[in-house]
Image 1 (cartoon, rainbow, N blue to C red):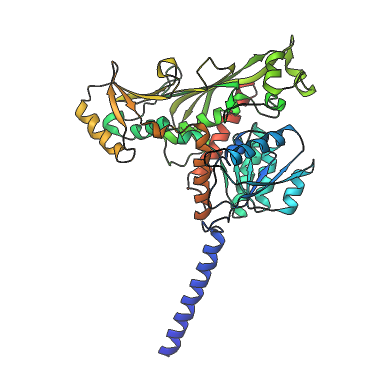
Image 2 (image 1 turned 135 degrees about the vertical axis):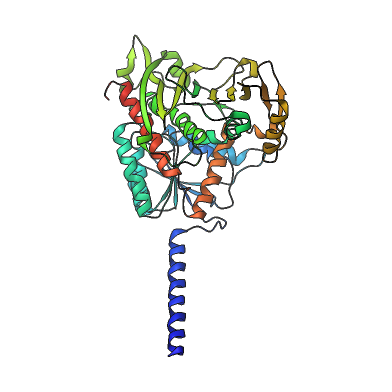
Length: 460
């Protein structure tokens, strides 16, 4: 009887081990082995698609499948990849295998010749493509925005359900989380001896404000950026209030409620507005290399000037905290300048402010402006905590408080952040899951932007 019981127990243990092994295997398809990730690049109309490949990754196979319609978008993408492959310093070794055709998406799904799809381009059908790829069992690393209106948002929620059902991951490329002054702003806000606690704010004086200024004509990887004409069509690119503001809303969530699971019920849109940037025919030609506006842009042309709804402002509360995010697009930056960022987090003891203007040489710089009489000793103790994580940072006394001095090695630039996001995603693939808060917070983020667009249009 005893022997039988022992045999039964052993058999049960073996069965449980086998089940656990199968479950683990199901949850984690990736081990981190060299070349196990096989990229598929889908219709790379935005230069962000190429920036994912600016560096090599051991885990990623150098052979990359590209599916796209023939044309300038594809050719410009391949030029950028070739530029990375042929540069003198640390060249890449990508081997682009290209399918050109209007049936590019159906062909990609049919062949399923990869396990991670990268999508950065025309946003008109992006949400549909994301959902279908996930249903086919393909992981997706997507450039923002993943939804440009409320209809897309509803589809995006279904896409996340498909990802869970098919044991694959969907992740959007939030590069701004890797900008050093933003990272330090978040870190200092978690030190109560310096920051205190986050204010609640008011609509007139929010606790958090983030403003981002961008430019249509710019340089990428050292060369003038050629924009596709559809980039200026809000029905294909999306309005500014649902595009760049995706980053700003993400940072509000990430900094104010780190690793807290959020829900759309935590969001209340107080007000939202949108406005256009004008672009002359000559400026349009310089940006796109096209001599005339295509037919789909004629609806937005007034007196031979293209009017693009690229600007937006959202005033809202998140768990009762008042926030304002603003995105502005100008045509070209002043000499020596580029895209700029302003951010303030108001605490009960100090304000944490990122400025990036002429005074800062257009380099993002973090300032701590105390609201109380916190002494230098308190700041030195708090700084010592962060120096273990970010060696070399220092504080410099100013008239209003302190400037955070950051070694140059941490200022690696916007383009490098795409590699950092990709490396994070590769680790998530090995883990077999995203952090528990990521998916609900992505859903909350896109609810905020798409609902704000609805409010700004007067359709609430």
